[in-house]
Image 1 (cartoon, rainbow, N blue to C red):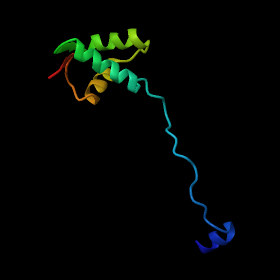
Image 2: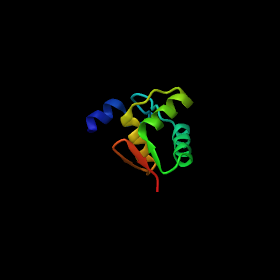
Image 3: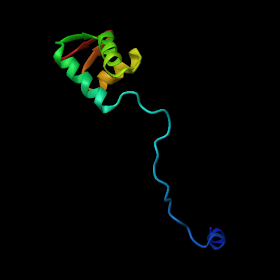
Length: 87
């Protein structure tokens, strides 16, 4: 270690900023908010396909069925099979 310190004179702290790597998210906070409003406006029982079509029409984003399930789960709403239940 000491030999490395002599060679490099000092140890500089890591100054690189944290950068998120990977594919950007399709579901933005605006999409989440719009889906929550859609679910609250359309009553107690909404099918996941309806939410999927809503996002595609409103935002022009093609998302998969599983993405909608994860979105609904993030919103703390119960999703069973192909239906969304709002308490």
